Length: 503
Image (cartoon, rainbow, N blue to C red; front, side, top):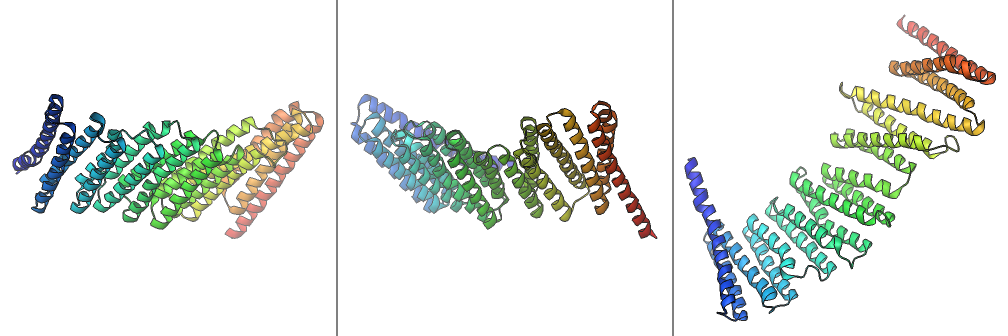
């Protein structure tokens, strides 16, 4: 049985393809010989090639009507190849036809092949039409005449090919269209000297529109189509890279608007079609739009809000990609916050970019942790929630400490005042942690407060009382001592209440 299958493959398909290739090559060499020896004038030679190609395509349709589909497709490809060869020779070799006329002829042949592909529901002819359509401007020599005219041609060609791919339900044509469009973009549009930066960016957007619409149609048909998802993702990434390289320096507002529009579009598609892939694309575009639209601490604030939204949406719709993206964005924002802490000096406490940025990150962290608890956490996720809360508490300590240090330096101008301010703030924060932990019956939070108050007491005993001036020693010792007494009193009341509950 296996031998019969291989014999059928080699005899029925491989030999057919090889034979067609040999006939095509033989035709090429025959025409070359005839042209070289001057057997036939140039005009009749071209006419002979065009007529031969048309007859081969017509005979292929006769074979298709007889049920010989594979052989018919091969002859159609041979006929189209002869047509392209003849039209190319009429322009490049004999200059009988102008580049525009040659281009029109090749487009006509491509259109015929595409119509036959649609009529016969043939994916192979669809691929042939894609190859012919993208080869036509290069073979006709019209690729460098008018970039906008070429862009319009590629736009229409992409739209037709993607519509054909949807009709034929094939996954081959879309990647070919994407690769060819990217080659045109890199090799022609990106280096066209007559285009301004804004025109070049607009051209990139125009070329992306067809793939965006195709992605919407694909999402409606199949929400889990990996090929269309990959094509859409690569197209979006290429567009974003092109916009970033073109508009980043002189046109940041236009760049931010384009990226935000992309995010809104994909979000709308995600909502309309319930497509996770488009939700991921929307998140990616929005993330890159933030640094184009904002500066400094405002970037951290925007990313913190986005991180909370992505993580909560991932929890709500059970999308691990969105959840991980939100957590990754939160972690990246935290790293930027740390960098901001090292390079930023607050002129006014609390009302400064550093504090607002850190507060946004803390709020986002709490929102993610709270949503995780409300929507249910597994045994694996519980440590993550606790880690998020601990990070938020650590950021509170760092933020308040930095603001207190800068405020004390600005007010008194001495490090002794700043050190005393740190002790006071740490004691107050520790008392707040413990008080909130007693109220919420959260043992972990209470232990965090106890660890902080122990650190504060150690600092006061070993550093403040040893090196600070007398007035600062008094403030540090009294305030921290009162805070520890308040914490002790709270614990006593908590223990007494717990015993009453047990009784």
